[in-house]
Structures are given as structure tokens and as C-alpha cells.
Image: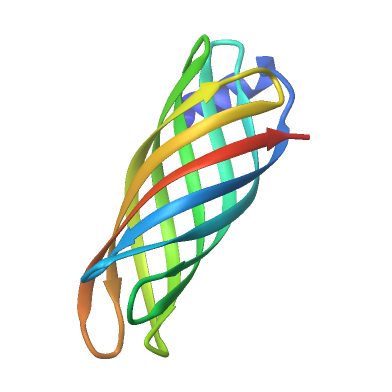
Length: 148
């Protein structure tokens, strides 16, 4: 974080973006669905990358639907057309009419097609808690990002 704040003074502009994606989730079985994200990001002149985004997701398996809302902080490094990053995340989830909360982490890779479009692939893993139990929740996502 200190490196991030030290480099903001000589950074490029802050981008606003929207992503649309397809997700594969796993609790006890796989679920497939869609997600949409809105956020801001920036790459500094020294190629450090940061992003804050808010994500809504809806997935469905044979027995249930899963609704998620999560907030993510991404920190990484830009390598020309590619950006590699780590993710810290907080998630609220509804499934089986049960609400769950969790914190998670992950990693991602972005291919920058041009200044406006990029393709993201990332994985996140959460430790979830409900009033009934604790469980592990995983998400794999591929998404198309559009910078305004």
C-alpha cells in the first residue's frame, strides 16, 4: 500500500470501468452464471496497478441459485499488454435463503486488448460463515472490461 501511495503523484489518470463476466462457482457442487462489476483503477508510471471494484453475481446449479455482492481491492504490476494482480475481497451471499459473509483472496491476469478493452481471468477463494456453519467458496471468472 505504501508503494501505491508514493506513486500516485506521478500516475496516469484514474479509469472508471465496467465489466461483464461469466462465472463458475463451487460450494458443494458447481454453479454457473453471470456477473457485472463497476470500479476504478490506475496504473502508475512505474507500472504498479491498483483497483477498487464492486461486483454483483448470480449463479445457478441444479438445486439452487446463489446471489453474491462483493467488494475487491486489486494490487498488481503491469507488463505491457498483461497485468498480474492479487485480490483481497469481502463477500455477502444468499443461497438456500441463508445469508453468508466471508473474506477471501485470489489472483488474476488481465490481457489489455487496447486502452478501452481488456480480458480478465481470475480466481477467488473465500472462508464463509453463516449462522449454521462454515464453508469454503470458490469463484473462477472470465470477463470483458470496458474503460470509460
